[in-house]
Length: 451
Ligand code: ACO
Image 1: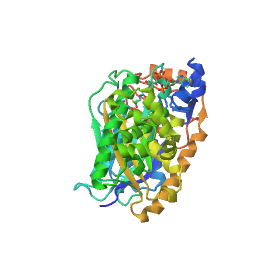
Image 2: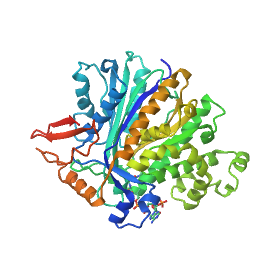
Image 3: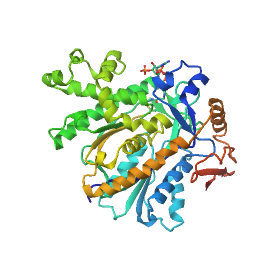
């Protein structure tokens, strides 16, 4: 099989948001902290009407509908999530309700979890299956979804919620490069969810940023090494048309692109460095490990990479800035944002690198080629058009006052473990086609309806 990758995609985010400017006032923090300091504009959230099963059902059902997918043509269904509501039963089994009613039950795959990385792991499982001897000629679907919520405090504005569904198979318009995936995995307590009675994580904000940036250094350098093996002319960022990142908040992504430039700078020969990085020679003996919070390095390389950021990364941040951190779908929301910002003609032949990070920690950098085979051009056009419709829903959301947002969060928190339970959140406010929780019975069984 050739050109295995993403054939179709769908994104869903909840219909309500809170404005970060309003949240700054409500939280009594200096004006600009969330909007400029974190680079966030709006944050989507759900009431108790939605949970991880409903979010994933909504995205999956839309992918199937919009692309007229024959359910018997799906041989694998994978879910990546860190929103755990059952220690045994996978979200995938809930998604099977759509397939089982058509008699389509011969479908491999279950859930994969490690913070924001689960979606990428699920995607790799799907690609590996299509490229393996187990493959039976059918397609795979990957769903990544999460509800990112934090307790009151500095992390709360970095929440978000959403789901992405992707159809995977051969002859795709978005093709995964083979043999160059570069991973960095190790143990860290930067962000984790040991309290099973709470929806909130334990998070060491500063450590999580350091872990994210050091994972980026490791993945990027290994990725470049592997790329140079297949193409000795590979020149890091200069050889890439786009660079996409998992986005906890947009400011960290801009800093990450600067960090990539800093790595290119450190890896350059003296001669190259002078040509490509004029005026930065004073940083040439700096050590990566000492510079995660070095203001001078950060400032110098943020300035150096400003134009590169505008071209290669900023178009990928539209959803992240307006929805917030969706956790597992965050990077894929970045891909969606980038695709809808361009025409098919502008994208054909381009190469993107993508950096996936999940605290704890698991991370990988990999790359996508757009239309290796020109015959996939019409599929790309269809993909962009379909995603433009989905992204336009950003402007159809309802803005909610921070007090009401806080009250809705409180209802979720108080009832996280209540059973039997009937949600009180509005059904009217949901977008058409959204799945919602009808009730949880005394045996904690959940039932859903679709609006
Ligand atoms: N105007 C403009 N900028 C401001 C203002 C203002 N009035 N006030 C503060 N800022 C800036 C700060 O200088 C800082 O910028 P810097 O990072 O460039 O220094 C930024 O706003 C944030 O302010 P801090 O004081 O650093 O914020 P705080 O420590 O309170 O919280 C944090 C930030 C740690 C990111 C927190 O929101 C958090 O813990 N989030 C969850 C963890 C996270 O997302 N980690 C990232 C990787 S792991 C993952 O994906 C979950």
